[in-house]
Length: 282
Image 1 (cartoon, rainbow, N blue to C red):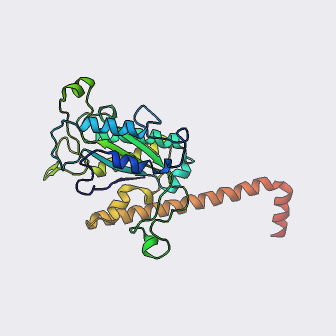
Image 2 (spheres, helix red, strand yellow):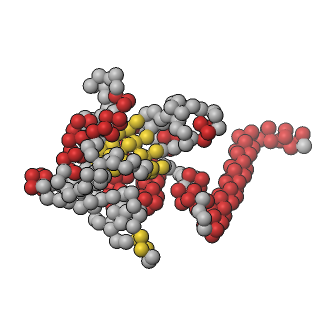
Image 3 (cartoon, helix red, strand yellow):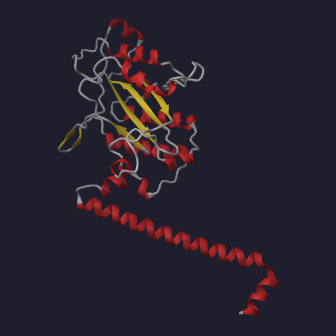
């Protein structure tokens, strides 16, 4: 389960979110109003794009931002095809996971926040296209813009930079707390209280998926393992290799155990006559 934050181009998130919302509605083009899926939030489904724009923009008004400062952020939740197969590409399950992921997002600021304290909207997409960064494109096996095969469900999340205003705060223009997920604030002795650490969120989302859907994640699928394997720290890389060896040995033991159990089951189902015949033939 990948939680992917992409740094916005300068100024891209500084104004209204109208352009982003319009882009995210691309799969609705050509569909009737009844066929369109819309966005969802913590407690609502089938929210129209115009409502998303109105509420997101209103929450950023009169918050003391400079013209070029970000008003909102966006990230994606990208299940693997194996994870999608485990939940049978069930969109309701993906929504439930997204709602938990946003609880994780709020908690990750370490300010006692919950999802209800944020202004956020999400949308499930069903298709993905190859980009210039994909290995298949680099190897000449696929073209940029070509649709990827297989299950490709993923979630786009749009979240306001600011804590949610109450109706009274909205009327008065009272400012609320600023929340940025794009910078890891650290001191030499650890993370500053109230900071946002993306790696912590990625690990929390992975754990939430596993717990929600009883998913047995292999070592190769674990964020901690992948991160350690790519680390510049030799001790972390060694740990990753040791974990891989342990899992390989455990897998071999399980396969051997299953083989013995299967042989025992075959012998017991053969019956006395067949076993006697096998004994004579030997």
